[in-house]
Image (tube, rainbow over all chains, first blue to last red; front, top):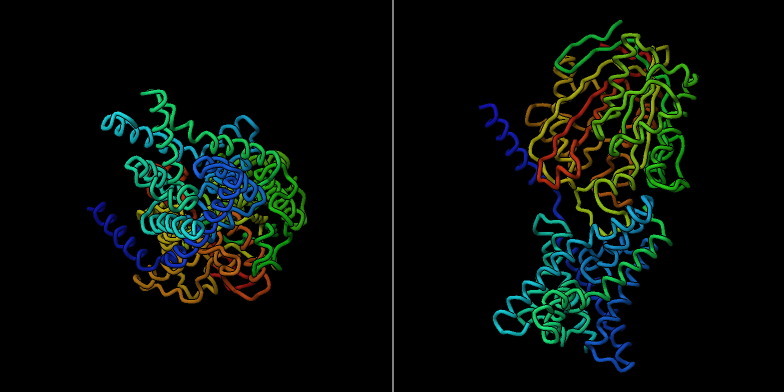
Length: 153
Length: 116
Length: 342
């Protein structure tokens, strides 16, 4: 009985919290995510076109473009700018490949104080790890299904 | 024109990710995982490839492009090596990005200190 | 006169005085509205230390040294040290104690630890065994971030309910009251309250019920009413938490009104410094009390103050496992020199 009363108090309180909690500025967030994400993509497109000037096909240029973007993301993270970009741009900064670089470089810098092996080495994938694990697994499953259906992946 | 589509598509994908983050009680990590998986799935059914062909970096720079890259890597590897390609293709295609991130991560750890 | 138990967790204490306080804060806190009240403002978060944990430890050491110095005594005259911090195994408190070599009671109640220590010190001093007790609490933004959330350089959009862990330390020396001392006249140790909040980015709404419970217990036991206090300061409920506490009070006929304020709301310019809900961390209530609140009492601007530090007692493991967040609040009532005491 006492438990029921306690859980009712808790439920009522959570309802109250819902009415008082300030909402996220969703519209503003969406606009900034669009602008920042779009801008980073355009930078990527510019780099890709640069590589294509040297005779690469669009497909061939994708991989070196990724590497350059990751370098830029790492540099911005090092200077302490990338987290500020994401504060405004949200997913517009997190979702592009530069955000992936940020997710690896930030823990690497942070855990330098625990040494190169147990700090940097062990923590490098703390944030990016899940993306790789599930990205690779999903790609495998999708590839397998396609292989079973079509005979070629 | 390519730049316009890159901006529009890249921006829209990020906006969709932001919407997922703001509407549901999930962390950014959950959104990243969801989008890389979506990239692999849409890559698998051939839709993401179409997006890449007209939006260029707008589709390859956001994280779903990473999932797409891995799936198309598997496709190519299976053509060359058969079934074993299912295991080697994904990581091979993503190798450049991952290795670059590892190296830059190490470098940054040596050169920079975190600021508040 | 020994402390007298007057309620489930409430004690009346007499002749317990605050001999001195000291507060040191980081650069961001040093740009906030309370900047003139702190003894020292660090120019950088790292303070030339090779790790942020060392910086946090040093901030506590320096603050406690300063408090002891301002009390006009040496460490040798401190009978007991009480305090805590947020880091695993309360390393800052424990490591800082290597230097002063005084008996140590390390405490943990997250951000509520300063009033837990101050309350215990009052009980110890009231009973005259031991007579002089130093209390201190510290938090460091970057050290807390990397333990509880993410690396600081990781891009991460804070939600509007998120708090900013303060880089701050506050300390006080408590002893037998002499003329002119701010006195501690009552203490209520809170119980754990958990009304089912789960969001680690919204600790204000998780902690508000604990603060309410402790304030209610305190008023019931002492017979005080809200208007007996010039100010009631909670620890780090922030904007949302204070709003909820006002609402909880109204439901039960306790109208706090403008007397209710919060250390976390006071430490920064909330909008300009982009800290959303406000400051948090053990150093928040400790620093704001030791710098600002104690000053207002000492200057005679307030007669009586109820300080209610609030703590969210969760760990990264428990919230990843989906557990709700148990919270606690401890209250200490303080009076101006020569103020009429009940």
